[in-house]
Image (cartoon, rainbow, N blue to C red; front, side):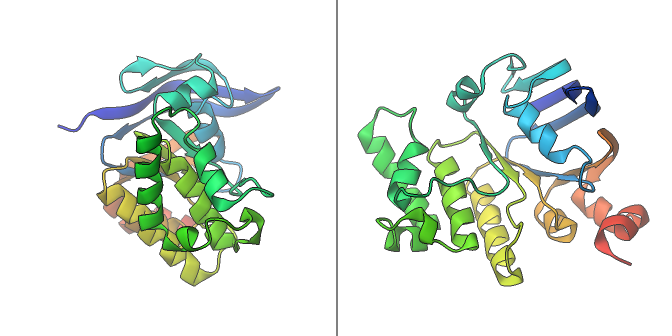
Length: 238
């Protein structure tokens, strides 16, 4: 049986007085792609931010690789191998592509290992190697997403949180990004995915959770969710 990488136990999160997450419980097993589905404001991104420590949960626990990380600061969570690629890319403009990637390995002291990881990123994203010395601001939206994902891979993550990787991209670029996500998973990266394109997400994922107003209202393997009439009507089209 696969090891459980991430567990959320009855997590409650607030933004001020706004009750954003209401008793969220979920798990991600090693080697899986797990997706979170839901309308805007359902709590998907808040779930990722709570996992990565950017938002503190008021109640419940976040367990990563068997350790309680609920009260641990985000930079310590990163050092444990839990990495979030944020919505909107958030690359460092005014810095080169290579400098952006090097920032992703800020916890690493072994230069040989840094070079190995950089070579892996360039193997996955050849366009980044071709333009490694260019200012990151010159990249297209799809290329910026590749850079954001590559920066996350520089940490050699044990769990990768992807928040809306296809947002704002042309359809052909969406397919390319999803192909890359599948490759990363086949290479052994466990992924928790928030993706606005539910049809694409469920084709990629092994398992899915459906959120509504901060609560999980449905969960199942991805194949079953694709056939569920409620999911078809709400997210996949009739």
